[in-house]
Image 1 (cartoon, rainbow over the protein chains, first blue to last red):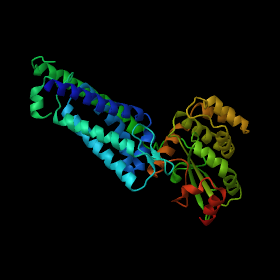
Image 2 (image 1 turned 135 degrees about the horizontal axis):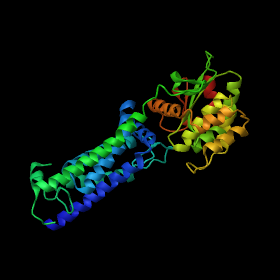
Image 3 (image 1 turned 180 degrees about the horizontal axis):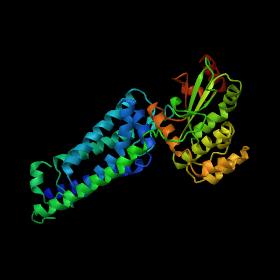
Image 4 (image 1 turned 180 degrees about the vertical axis):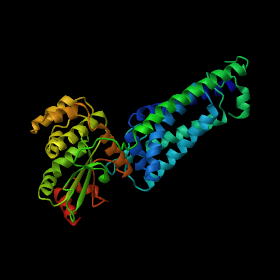
Amino acid sequence: MREFKLWFGLAARLTLGGVLLVAGFLKYDEIDKSQMAVRAYEMLPVSLANFIGIVLPFAEIGMGLLLILGAVTRITAALSALLMVVFVIGISQAWARGLSIDCGCFGGGGQVEPGTANYITPLLRDTGLLALGIYLFRYPQSKFSLDKSSHQNLEKGI
Amino acid sequence: MSAKPQPGKDNFTRNLVIGVVVGVVLIMLVPTIISKQTKLAAKIPASVSAERGYGIVFNEELTGVPVIDIYEDFQCPSCARFEGTQGQYLDSIIEDKKATVVFHTLSFLGTESVLAANAAACSADQGKFLALHKMLYQTQPQENSGAWTNEALVAAGESVGIKSKDYEKCVTTGEYADWVGNVQASAAQSDVNSTPTVFINGKELDRNSYYDAAAFAAAVEQG
């Protein structure tokens, strides 16, 4: 059972980390669109939304790399889970308020023609990724992880 | 993977990896943040008003007429449709001095948008902005297909009657590239989240009027 958990942990790391890395990579050199995507959620003051639009792709790349390599898995998993909660809230409120926006999850973003917005796919995806993040926070040990032999670290909770 | 823990050694590798990842991300992030700031030293075309979001302004001097702000990207297909529907009307109200019109040439769709916006600014210096504007939309290629090179944009300028060598130099040297960034940064501050976006007297126009000549003209006349 323990062995299975380690392999599952690896799969969770690669999935969550892989999605974050790809999402960040598709956005980091299209920062204008990324800023537009964050603004279109109409949740934050414009200047803060623009700042997050710049930082988010790089944060995703960093978190994705750390998860894939298995370094500071627990903290990174917690941050990823938190990020997914924010995404779920953002998409849900856009849906509830009847905004017509592209989620901008993997580039693109901004307003779209009324009636063409798709909120279900990103919501399901982010909920699944949230579950993986929570799992890795609870059980950060996994195969091929740089954290693997640092039992002291795990005991200290980092 | 069942090796005995070797805390010292493994911690070193792990900490090194963490340091490298965080370091690389920061090294990429900081220049990006700086590049998105408004560059006050940017060279701007004569017809541009920094107070009006670095847009290219027609009929700046008029008072008591509607102010129409148009945010567009030369590569955006909806903007080509907007120009096709409203272009002639906009030309006529500029000609007849019935409105102040501000064109904000955004560049979020990529490099070729930057080149096109720069060329448009160069054409403004030659008094041919509206002609080139129309020409670029009429011949709009696929997004980032490589069709809009500086050479192609020089040729487009010549085709609308720009003869000056200054235009060619302005296009090929990317004279207004920093200004293009300022236009985009200003649109970001104005919360423009799609193109085209039109403001009349500072109020965002309902999207249903964009492709309807009569509704658009009515909205402009109401102010």
